[in-house]
Image (cartoon, rainbow, N blue to C red; front, side, top):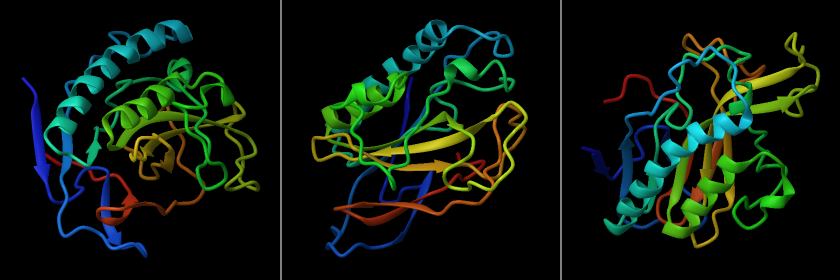
Length: 224
C-alpha cells in the first residue's frame, strides 16, 4: 500500500519563498511520496559500488513506478523523502560506495539523462534525471554527495581527516521534457548522521518553476 499526499504546497523538502519574473499559475499540484525504504540489512559493513547500486536500484524501481503514477494524476512537482534511496545507519566508511559527486548547478549546467558521459559514477543522478524527463515532472530526491577537498564553496575550510566531504544532499531536476539538474542542497543540521559532514557554511539554495515561482530547498523534520 502506498500513501500519496497531493497538496497545493511543497511541504517536505522545500517551501515557497518568492516568485520569479514569470507569472506563476494560480494553482498547481504537488505530490509527496511516503516511501517504505528497502534497507541494507548490514549498513555498517562496507560494500562494493556494484552492490550499493543493486541496493539503490530497488528503491529507484519503486520511485519510477510512483513518478509515473504522480504524472498520471496531474502532479507538476514530486518530492521523495530523506534517505529514501540508500537508507540510513551507515558509518562514514560504509556509505562510501553509495556516494556520488554531485556537480553544483550554480557552476555547471548538466543534464545527467542526456549527458551521462560527462561525470563518472553518477548512475543515481542519471536515473533521477531521466525519471523527471520521462514523466515531465519537477523531481526532488535525497542522496549522499561526495565532494573533494578543498571545497569549492568554502576553499579555506578545514578538510575532514580522510580528505573528503560527505554530505546529506537534496537534488532537484527540471521538467519541460529535459531533466536538467537545477539544485543541490547540503543539509546543515544533521541528526545522528555519523556518515555525513556538516557544511562549513549554511546554504540557501533555490530553483525556479514556471507554475509556482521560486522554491527553497530545506529539510523539515518530523513531518507526517
